[in-house]
Image 1 (cartoon, rainbow, N blue to C red):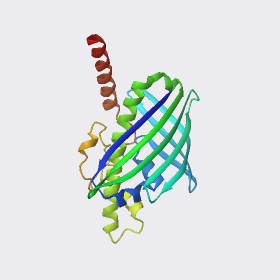
Image 2 (image 1 turned 90 degrees about the vertical axis):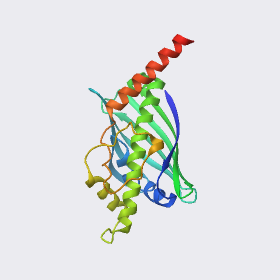
Image 3 (image 1 turned 45 degrees about the vertical axis):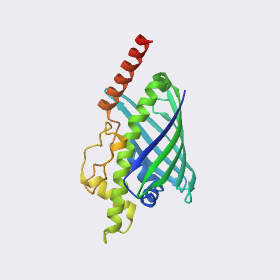
Length: 225
């Protein structure tokens, strides 16, 4: 089963600041709820894990990430990831292209992703997978916006030797609570040094509500048809 996801998210930062953070694969990986980079094989290859929890149910994937391209002129990152769950019953692959586009004094993060699921994971169906992806992306963008803002603060700090490392420290040490997945992407407020740390897993309550909402919409549309 394949799901194609195309999204545009506004960011309250300059395009150059967002692009600087987007090039750091490990920092970007930490912004993804439930994701963790476990090993840097070389400059373009990484190993990692992704865990998604919805109530008592949990799926954990382990796989490889390849940086296919980094285009500084176009501010574009191209990633390909492949993996399987720890039980060996499901597989997943992702082809992601993310671009930072200037928009006045701020910018937008434009992304297109093709996600292919196999095995038990494919049984969720396209509608549910789109709902899951939407919630994950909302949390990711909120965390990424906080990282970009923290990176700007770290650059202004004379004690910070590595801007991106300093940004991760600032964003992570400020608070331990996850960023709610229900926050609207269009209403992202500028992050500050007190921005929440990246969520460790997908917000299950927000996801459950989104799935129920979509199911009710589908039911009502069939009744009125």
